Image (cartoon, rainbow, N blue to C red; front, side, top):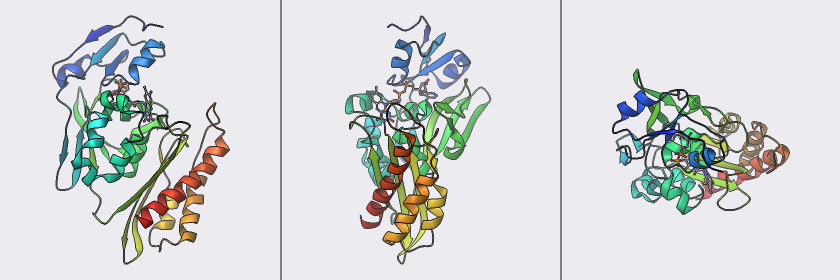
Length: 281
Ligand SMILES: Cc1cc2nc3c(=O)[nH]c(=O)nc-3n(C[C@H](O)[C@H](O)[C@H](O)COP(=O)(O)OP(=O)(O)OC[C@H]3O[C@@H](n4cnc5c(N)ncnc54)[C@H](O)[C@@H]3O)c2cc1C
């Protein structure tokens, strides 16, 4: 099938892009999700605003954060030595997104704005307490990751806002990370995936992040699991309890890919694996 007819605009600035955006328009970045949706006529925008030419790509490390331009290609972020050093869990998660061809075109901002509940990037950025910068007609605002993902393919971005940057606060260099993902094929979206970062002092966990993809209408933070970990020595019993707590916090759907109960059970298994990796790495 071919896309329904639409007008096409290639703006030369963020301001021009934002001025053109609104209900009935669609932002085109890498096109890896939007173009299939257009061709399936699952989306029928009157106007496609092609922002892929705007200078919004790049990776920068400041004293407190890693900052990614929204149009940074997934592959560029994945292979960036700066990203690997500053945010190793993000770099690891990127290797699980689709395949190299898709990552060569797809952008970090596109993955976030697409907000697939099973996508790796939204979940790992939720674990990182990332902050998103959006430009709209009224200017610039920032949105915390915890307030950004509202439902499947639904975000806090307004129809006339463009996501321009992603700020990932740096964790201490002593942080240890783990991730575990289950998918039918290596390139597929996750049936469930877990991302975790632990900071410890004298063998006691002082900060714990556990985020889950694929097991709720949005990526989620497993807050009960994090509470069990904080202040604890991460023994196998503690990790087991945290894994069970994470599974209990999920709200999975039954769909053609897997029953809800399976996704919930797998969340416990994956959380245990990710935590073990973080503890033993
Ligand atoms: C074969 C295949 C396998 C895939 N497997 C995975 C996978 O395993 N994991 C995974 O996470 N994803 C997967 N995907 C999805 C894909 O990787 C991402 O959704 C995609 O890269 C999104 O980035 P993009 O730049 O291509 O966005 P586009 O397709 O251009 O846009 C996606 C959506 O985001 C909006 N948008 C894009 N940029 C902005 C912006 N700056 N501001 C506001 N809105 C914006 C668009 O309007 C659109 O609604 C797969 C895709 C394919 C084709």
